[in-house]
Amino acid sequence: MPTASDMKGKAALVTGAASGLGRATALKLAAAGADVCLVDVNPAGLEETAVAVRDLGVRAEVFAADLSKAEACRQAVARAVAAFGRLDALCNVAGVIFFAHAAEMPEADFEKTMAVNLAAPFYLTQAAIPHLLEANGAVVNVTSSAAFIGEAYAAAYCATKAGLTHMTKALAMEYAHKPIRFNAVAPGGMMTNIATGMKMPQDLDRSLIGRFTGLRGLVEVDDVADMVAFLASPAADGYHGACINIDKGITAG
Image (cartoon, rainbow, N blue to C red):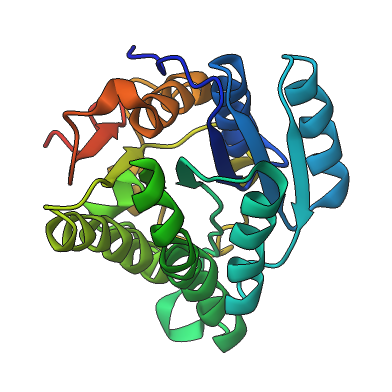
C-alpha cells in the first residue's frame, strides 16, 4: 500500500476524525509529520484522537462542529489556518448513511445525507482552495463503492457518493493548470461506527442486500487510511482527478 511522504512542517484538516476512517487517516498523517486539525460532531471522540495524534509528536487542533451547516465548514478551515498558519491537505472523510425504503425515507434523513456527504465537502473545499493553492496542496474526498453500483435502500447515500466522485473530477479539470490536486478514494464496506450503527428496514429483501456485499469480506480501515494519507501528501504528485477503488472487488463486475 502506498504511504504518505514526509509531511513535516505541513498541516492537514481531517473531517470525521473522532473515530473510524477519519481517526485512522489523522494518525497516518501525523505519523508522516503533519500537524492535524481534527473535525467532527463528536467532541469526546475528537479529544481521544487528539491525544493519539500528539503522542506522535505533532500538533493537534480540535474543532467540534456539525458539518451539515455551511458556516461550520468555513469555520473549520479558518480554525486550521489560524492554528497552523497554513493548510496543505483537506481530507473529506465524514459521512452518514440512512437505509430506508425510498418511498418512506424521512425528509430530515435525506437532507442530512445531502448536507454531510456532498455539500460539506464542497463548502470545505471552497474555503480551503486559496490556502491549498498557496501550499501546492491537495484535496482527498472519501466516496464509496456505492458511487459505482446501485445499492438497495440507499438511494440518497448512493447519489451523494456518485456526486462527490464526479465533483472531484470536475474540480480536477477546473484546476488542471493550478498547483492543487483533487483525488478520491472509494472504499467498500468497512467496520467503522457507520457500519456498526446502521439500521436496515425490517422488511428488507435480503437477496438485494447480497448484491453489494463483498465476496472477500470487509475492507481494512488502515488500508483505506493509507491511501487517503498518500494522496494527501506530495508522494502522490502524479495523481489528479483519480478515484481509487478499495473494495475487494465489489465493483469489478
